[in-house]
Length: 618
Image 1 (spheres, rainbow, N blue to C red):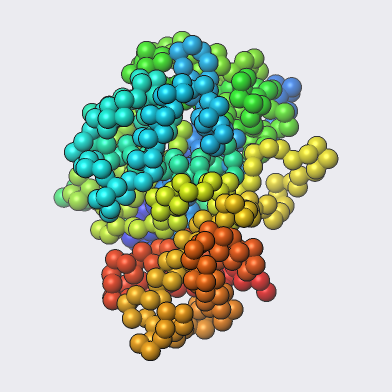
Image 2 (cartoon, rainbow, N blue to C red):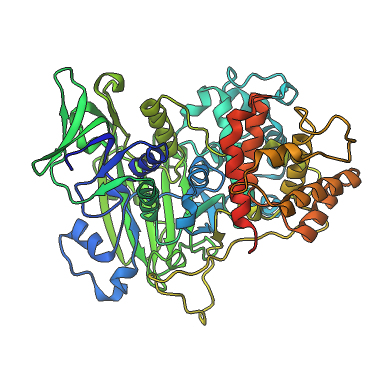
């Protein structure tokens, strides 16, 4: 341990493990320590014995709850937005190869009549939904069309509104939406936890709704969320493995990790059990430097074990229910999160439900009662609360980078935002995550044709499947064995076509016609790919078969410009969809930004080439 490191990371929570992985990939020498003997810290997943010991002080849970080791109970329960920043981070770092995911069955919203309504996931569900009346649906439709067409770079889509100045309240009033509709959109779609957003610039509000819609379109399922098999405790372990692969050193069960400072107040190392490891910078959660943080709130939560799904959720095995603040007379929202044996977090027939909120009283049992009443009979219930902290130190003065505490929300967007901000402060550079190829362009295309049921096949790195459990005759493999994940797929129908592939074909066409990449003597139907071939090495390059696949796709598109959706469907059905779209889009975005300075995009091109090569059949 008596060595010098670039960075020492204290705590193995999700934020710390993501940073450890990213910094190790950057080539920094990283030492990662934790006072606990397990990974995850506050974001770990506990088995039944650990759960009982933590909340009951006993190691003997009731026998009727099933096998102890089949429980994986999250301490920070959250779903993952399918097109959100955490998925981008997973794909960017290739951590998805260590994880499998399932789509979440549904998302619901609560009203003060103690009724829950499903948040529509399809056009048919939207038409049948009792959330709005007929005339209100027409007004809401106009608002959603504006949101889906909005593009920051296209002033024509702004309709004369500057969303950096116009408030969310003003843009909503333009469409005359009712209070209940505003509640639904602001809290169930934009996922704001209070109404402060109404008086803030509308740009964030619109981006959040677009993210929800893009995530909903990404995988087959009734919600915009995905969730890892065996619980969220798998996430920090996966990023820890990434760090180890790139040379990071891990030490668990290290007591009394004390940060050492020099005479000027800068962190110079960490001491544990009489040994000191020197470093240039320290990254940690608030518990390791309690004198450099301040309390900003408190989260209260109920953990419930049940033998049935939540009533009125169509027997969903995984579900989120949002209880907006106005419906409860609170200052912030309440969240209900449920998963089950379908995600391998409990024995067969058991469900784990969580009710979470920002604490507004000192009585969690009474405060969480509205959410708990929605659950029906409960086998066991545990209450716990924790304070939330934010750092108060000046990182440039003490070289200490402290993460904030996890909030009460049931998604990871704020978590990853904190990680990216910390990464920039630590390294002095901005991390540009690979962006999903789902945006306003896809949405505009879908207005003239039905929305595809799934786009999962266009991100082959993320393995997902529906939450519906396998037939009873199916015998799942033990956890210690490795099984090939069942990847969600999408075959375009003649009516819908493969919209995303269509857009890939368009941008591939643009790629080889701009910046003089094609020969000056070529025609519009004859592309010169020699530049690309010169840039690709034998180890990292794409095979000639892939080059032919691209050219054939472009020609198919050009030959059927009058019916591009059908053309894309034909390409997908005959030659298979083009793999590694995420990496390809990142490369194209880089070219768009740097114009002729292609050297800045070399690493992204190599990532695309490597991904494509690895996805080729042997």
